[in-house]
Image (cartoon, rainbow, N blue to C red; front, side, top):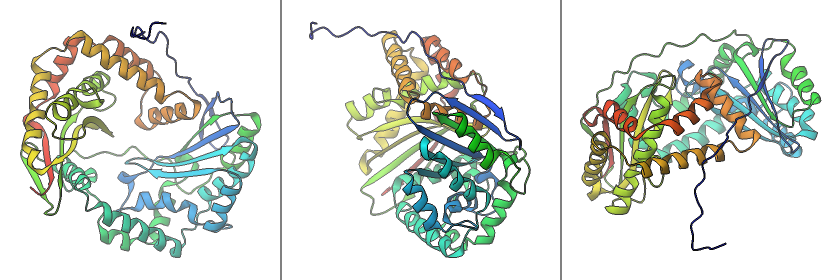
Length: 426
């Protein structure tokens, strides 16, 4: 081997993501099963179709989900934590705009014990007031610290500017909202949204017959929860104003956070997958145009990136960076220059091939094991996509042309329509 010669770059010849086997359990819940694990590990996800868009009060969806582990009719929060720790299990609770997620990682040999804990948490939570105050106060302290960060200030203001203050995606919790939380508020959200009819189950890893038997016994046999299936929510149209630069003042800030936003089509649109390739070229990886210009050439920042953030019915292309206060105008100027160049100059073949190779490698890394593949299928389900989404993604990366990149940029990248927010000593 001559180490002076760079190895040839080889295209990924074949790429397949294992499709789940779907089963309807006796109580009507759908179970998506990925039995491809070699290690004796199980990942179990319960996806509740309820999130921020379903709540009547700020923090209601997130805190209902978070408080599931704080006590049931038969177990205290300490007992739940002790049992999961004893069996080497790990529990993750999170929520999004339209879903709540309950994720259990468990050793297969102890799954019959850990599934019992999970089932009781989901089916018989009591939302104790004392634990609620502790959790709410802890989250309040985190909120107060984060609220002083210019990046958080800019991110929140960007959503307000794009969606409008009255829009569900333009409203954010305030300090007082943590004090206003009550157990009754969480019980109401649970009662209206948590049930077997409103839940989809994903299980991945070494899924044996005994694993499925225990899942069915604990969660899939009898109906649980009082509500039925949630109807699809109608998302109001955004009412924000874009175009002008909005400044959020923070006098003592050493740096300013710059965020630019532009509405894009949603995930089901025919242009969406190609737009992801275009965005990667613009600012979606370390070798992107924005990084080469603003970091490497101008030295205005340590990092700048663009990404597409998806919401039900729409998505946003967001450019983000933090820079010294005196470089803000320079950063904005160079972002505009790169957008104009995307619209007016066709990229060369070598640059596009680099982007394609990066994106193909990133997909391979992201879906290299059974547990991460399960997460991919959860994304497909919650986004309302078809099972061929990944095949279409690969086709988009492989087949997009230099001309198509420029056409998409000309169609969608409009500097004058971008929301522009700067938070800092400005």
